[in-house]
Image (cartoon, rainbow, N blue to C red; front, side, top):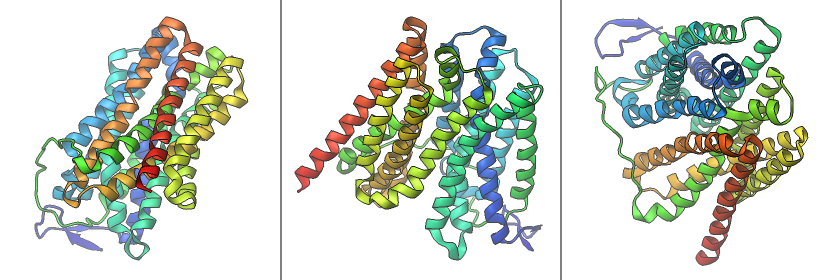
Length: 407
């Protein structure tokens, strides 16, 4: 079929039907997020090649959050003006550039940082725009179906990156090159699909107007926001910890040096998060935020025990429970914030929430790296676990107090 060009001119561009475009956007979303976590099981190889510390691993990982925050603050509303397709394509291009940077180098620290920032930019551009595009293209399936698909492909892609890289590094040659070559091939394939997708919204501008989205929380929402954002901070700090240093934990603390195993452990955390968001939140309803915080507390207690006694089983169980808790607390917290925010400030409040989330992906992990250089990896991991458990426990207590006050 044909459609009017994205810039509103009469030039006709061939497009795919919406029913075909929907799964293609979902696939592009998954592949883009896959690329952001692809280096996870490979950090130990970079560390061996470049002779840097665990702290540097966490700093390289945290560079991703810089790119995400820049994209969220600068490009958060761009797709509403220039259209979903014209915003998704630059996100895919940034992801391809990141893959190329990692593909052509493994011995220049500066380029590793560049690749991670580009990866963050792709994720920051893609996350909101792809979710909106799925909602626009859902048709009769509705917003709820599109939101569930967006959640599944987002978290599924994030979890699949370490698994894919770990398996390839374990069984195939060129572990610092082949995963990125495969990623680049996938990106090229999904970019073709996005090129031919129909534009589901009216285009109001030919060029994006870059405006910094200023974070803000109105007074009437602050109580709910602080509790939800604190729970989100704790949960995403856990995701950051497993994504950045799980291979180092397995290798240096437990003596397990399998790339595939490292990727599988990280995958299990993200898979649990997906289950928490899609399956458990509808089941627990209004209690989801409390149950999610409790899951984070229990998960961190088990992680502390697993590190103390050097138990792989406890480490995996801790990751799964914490992932379930993270997924529940994230979805329930964001829903609570959106429900209470005034309609004319909902976008600003949501942006502020995501700023907190992505700060949680970077700052605590870098703190973990600093502590590792001082007291060692196991002690730093235990300290991190205790801090997250205390924060999640505080949120749980605050939620109980708020319910009693309201009653």
